[in-house]
Length: 351
Image 1 (cartoon, one colour):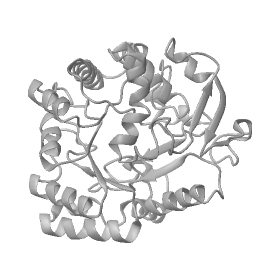
Image 2 (cartoon, helix red, strand yellow):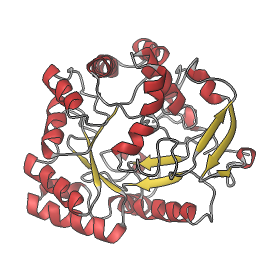
Image 3 (cartoon, rainbow, N blue to C red):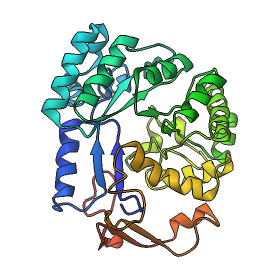
Image 4 (cartoon, rainbow, N blue to C red):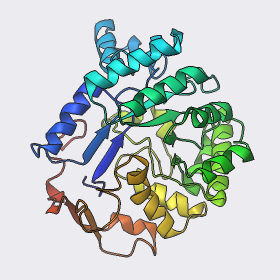
């Protein structure tokens, strides 16, 4: 909220704690960005599982690691990958009915093992149908050309980081299909400065993935695909840069796209560098997001009858994306936010 983001669509996290925060914000007991949540990525384990940061289990005790993972998985963890489509459908039905997520996200490809297909085509279709039956939008995690195609065939509403395809580029036919169907594509755009830093600092495999991703981004934009602003931004504690698991990925990086507070305006800068007009980049972070998640009747544009979320800037952002940082005022539901008082409670960062 302090950096001008009045609405967040959270695509991976602990469902129950997130729901409590979401509901507290909606009830105005807490000041914060409006939240819509998916909870777990269906098919993945929790943060200390092999899908994410399993080495953490060498630092914290097993009971805490198991409790943390269970808080994320909520019955739709990696065990679903062993199940039939009918069994997967039943698990997803329970997950939706008992936890009240605002939308659903699932694995089309592996998270750690990016090149592997996760759920079968029939299982993916079952997940999408079950979520649609409950009136929810569905997005898929895909990191390879074939997993992206399978997600599209399954009928997803939104393609998560549709620009990531491993070492291989996305086929022209798939790019055209995304554009022709106006499928919202939440690409993780990175600025020229960050891409240059990657090419000179990170291991060869990561360089190959980012090179292919950057080519995909430019082709998606050139083909007229509907892009949606999205980041992998999060919080690191005061000693995060020194963390042996994460520090090497961030130390010395230019225009880091995973830093909460900067990532959204850096995305807009990257979008312009890759061919979107300044207005198209702005719409990708406002109207396109609201439309992708089925919230355009309330959010995304300034119109009579919609929620009065306003960001007042001291300079024209269409002239220079750096001007998104010149925040003079933030309004949510027509109420001016005391930006200087945020955050009202410090969790990871020092005062």
